[in-house]
Structures are given as C-alpha cells and as structure tokens.
Length: 219
Ligand code: CA
Image 1: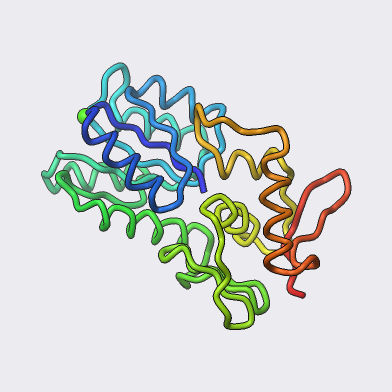
Image 2: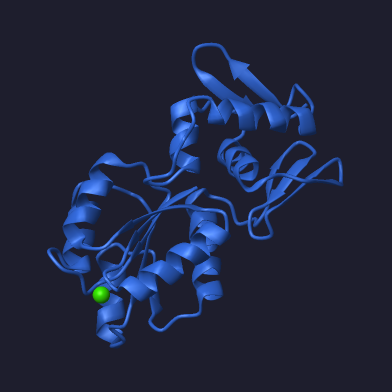
C-alpha cells in the first residue's frame, strides 16, 4: 500500500514517514503543495496524509483541486488548525478524516488503516482469501490457521494482491504498491518476492496470468 505524505515540517515529516514505513507502507514524502500535486497527477496512491499549512499551495486548495478532478483517493488531514470550523471545512471539501497535531503516531496509523478498509468497502480488519488470512495491522499471515513468516516486502506484495482477491495485478502495479520514491528496485525484485511467497504458501496460491500479471487464488 502506497501513501503520499504531504508535510512541510521536516521533523514531523521524518517521524511520520518512519512510522508508516515501520507499519509496512511504501511512503512518498512531498514537502510542499505543488510537489504533492505533481505526485498525485502521476502516482498511484492508496491514501494521502495531508497537512494544511503548506508552501506553494495550501492543503485546502490542493484538496479542492484533487476532488475537482474527480480523484477519489482517501485523504486524511493532519493539521494544527484546531478550530471546529477548520475541521468542518476540511471534511466538507472532501477529506475523509481529520487528526489534530500533535497526534499520536499509533493513532494516525490506526486511522490510516481504518480509512483504507472503508475505502475498500470492507469493515473487517483482516484480509482473507480462502484459508489464507492477513492481518495488516499486526503484519501477520496465517494459512489453514498456522502462522506463516513473511518478510516485510513479501507481506506488502501479498497484501496488494489480497486487496481484491481474483483481480490481476501487473508486475509494474505491484512495484508501485510496494516501493516508494528513491527506493532501489531490482528488475526482478517482484518475481523474487513472488517466488518466496509461492514456496511458503504453496505453488497454486499465486497464479501467473501470462502476459498480464498475477492474482491470488483460494486453493
Ligand atoms: Ca505545515
């Protein structure tokens, strides 16, 4: 799952990025409104964490542009603007949630996960495909009730596939979900993760749809 973090405060940005990466997300960090706008035009994000007071383009203006263009990406505002009218204005402009600074990092991450679940149309905190079950908050996987040890990247690949069981994702789409800006991605990195996943889960769990990509299967 890939998140765009929009934050101009270096200390807060660094802390939030670290927290989100430790929670298993790929994170791109934009430090002004224009940079964020460009990223949103090109990138494929599952969620945006948005500060409001930003250089070059204010967060509220950015949100208006985003929604005006019909972009449905979930937006969590993280701002020190604490007046009730600011919170109402943010939500009415199309934000999905609002946290006040200073916030607790664990709470921010819990809200991110809740928004992602809501956006996926699932109230459940778990992702399941047959007897394969992922818990994104705890970063654990079980198969037929037994724990399966996965690396962070393996988990991220499997999580991307299990967001929509049965849907086919290309290698490029998986790379976009798993790696953020500036991360070195070997040409066959995704294939290596898939190879390890198949070894751990059984060869039929992840199907290769020739020339298209990969999908997760129930058996
Ligand atoms: Ca700011």
